[in-house]
Length: 631
Image (cartoon, rainbow, N blue to C red):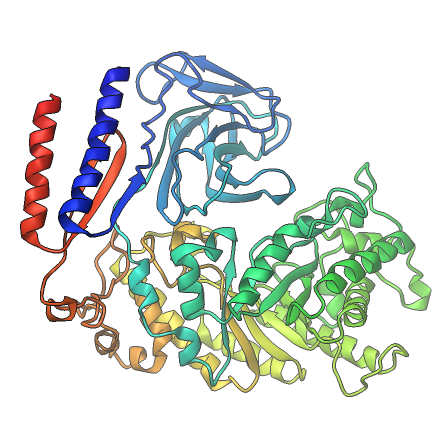
């Protein structure tokens, strides 16, 4: 074995020397990424799986199996994120789309399973859900599948969670592989979206660490001129696990990278009922703090965070999602539509804490945290534009409640002695999250919201736009009909945005491409699973032309294919052919076409680029001779 390995290494070295001598052209020797075979536990071991929380018991068993005779049984969980975890750092190449699959079976009952991935360790770790499904024992074995493009990282794992902390379950047939294909380079060569809209508004996107390196960052710089951190600047990411334990390193690094590219950052978010450090508004036993305690923590947190980023962000989502998900009728008092205290999914601990000790007779209420948050942020970073941000904003009741709140708080600010700029609003911006569905969106409702919010005097941003196929968490496959419907909605929306661009500061797409979207099951974004442009991209590029039926002409103008609606998956989008400028002709290359070949020897790839076909043929002949002698 050792002798054979040495022989193969000698052969690799000889080939490299031969290429240099014969062609005088560059030789690139690249370590080939190993491929992970399907993990089926048939050898009786855990095959690298460990407990994500360090407390789980993982047992190879023959009681159940999806294929073969064995699976992995997971027990002794106590948190929803506890479960089996596999380190795949060795297999993951940066900027490559990977498909991750796992089959799961609950021991009893029904619960929500999540296929997730972790990038990095410790306080700088990032976590992403790749797929989520409700599975019961009667469903039998169920597949979880997601796609992800990884950055260059020193620690990457995939793991299976279950929202029921003590649920026991089986897993089997786990795979991690990279399908062929790629369209991101073509997308980088398309007309720049932010250049197209430079006279209207900023074109933004949400980013994660993986989006700030390699071709993904090239795509970001090509199409977007404002970025929002998907998770890195949320309260739990910055606020630490205890009071005073602030974590700025990851967000600082991201902002510095974007600043170096001349791309401004919108801060998201300071105050939210979700993803917040518990110490901000709760006691260790989970009960809410008193009003005075919560207010002091709020002021410290905002002073520290907004003060730290003063001058480095252009704006902040000061308060996020303060209103209940559904506000049907128009409320007589906007406070009636807020998330209140309690333990339900619709509750807000900030409201509960501010209500705990409020002097109702003096007009105090749990809602006061919103005004305080805006005032504290204005004082900490006077130059940032301050936003309120929420979803389902296209519905009449919620649209009106948000408008009434902004008008009320701005009126109150006029008389506040801390106000040193009487002509400036406190709530300066209103963010439309714009998380829509192909089957549940009437663009007229969006226009109605814009028209109502204009009357508040605040600027408007479309902050988190995505349109997956389906309706209300019932995702559909993005077939030809759904893709046309999706693209048409994007075109209708961008036409509306352009019509009201005097009042719109920014339109941000919530993510770079479909596989890395938080709603990836519905393929909601402008770029597909290979990074290529979808029909929605061309709709955004020229909404009027698209709605007039000229989408083939639009694609032709960009070097794209003109075959009408793109084919159904896996080629979900239309990838443009390279333009004539992209590929030099023989005359541009000095009269000779370059030729190349790739050889694999003992896991090493040797990429040969030579100046002529004749030289390449000579090299290939030598390789064949050497390979025969080695045998």
